[in-house]
Length: 390
Image 1 (cartoon, rainbow, N blue to C red):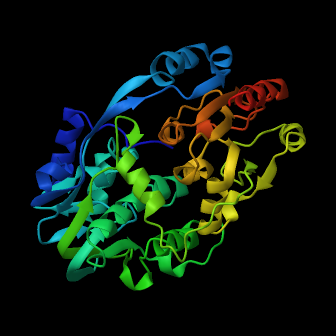
Image 2: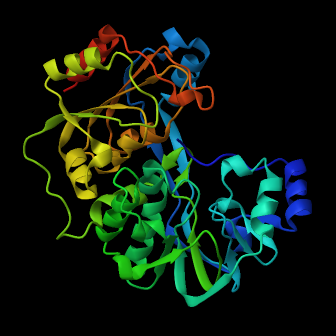
Image 3: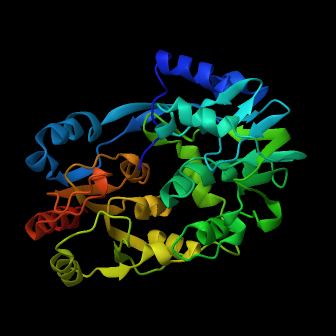
């Protein structure tokens, strides 16, 4: 999990042009008009890390974290802009949400894994499908990554929140049809619906699209990334906390809790989970199946948690709602690199312990989803270091 990848090289761009008959343009180049939702932001972030054992297990990676990531540094964030696409913009079917307009593909809609696969992109945009036209003003939320809760909550939902704050009731929001129709509990659709409703966007405001068709828009709008310089814009983070509808907004518990977030499925399992859980339980942690919790219950949990333990991954995205000074312990295999959730800790002026363990059973297709073990002694050090903070 992380921010979007780099753009293709000049050679790959040329291959895109040749194979797809489309050039690649970013929002600034393709939009007819742009309006700032949030201004540029310049500031500083402080190192939040109080303990990590990464360097002992993976020296080069650990040194990179210590020297480049877990440091005090200045930050310069780009503005967040709302852009209007040319009339006739087409959202292509096939499940990848590719968008074309005026002979160009929108860069921000090209998934990192498609950036080096122009043949697949050519197939997606070259397939003939039924086409449906919409004339009303719409805001595009459907994008790669939407199927992962962390990408939805941390990258896509904030766009809707900012637009709704600036232009209440103006737009319909474009999402895949399962958001309204799929009841599967372990998939994110139900929580996506709940999260939109918590900001005043009910099902009548959603425009659902089908993978088997192309969708053509007369007045489609998009919002650029709320992330730059490896941080979410603080204005977006603030809006996510402050724009919750009062009747739905959770109320933080008066009793601070120590929360262990239990990851279910999708790899990255702790092989000695019983020993780790026993230590956490003895230290006063309660266990929460956050992936199965209602959206507002997740928000309430993060609002109330003084200390959070989790396997590094999407379960931590609720840190957007955490209290100032939150203490976070994440565990992960030593080969997993990610700074998405660290950025959220920085926004809350939190304190962080990054504990890694050696890989147990290697996932040969996706290495960071490999199972791993955690040394209870390392976890004990992390708990003590965080507990000593006043």
